Length: 117
Image 1: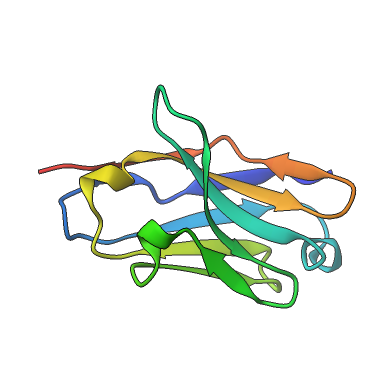
Image 2: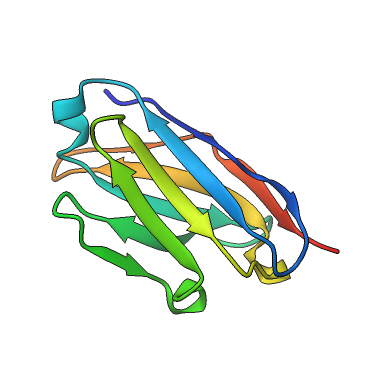
């Protein structure tokens, strides 16, 4: 069992930056075996994949955030980060952290990001 807790969201102007944090409970050795993702969901829309960092540190992103967002992880601290730069109003959503392996997945409760002037 893994408990995920996101933080770092808030209100930011277009062009601004935010850093999201995802803290995972449990053993460090277990955490390092999970692929970690960030998803987001705007009200009335489906939850969409944003970024992934695998156990081997491979990363991938949806096209709309490439060059602006960076996902990283610190296995020693059981942490995953999402650095978001040059934010746009369309990035407004609740951002969720997800951990997964071949047999299970876990989600956090989300953190709200609002990009508005």
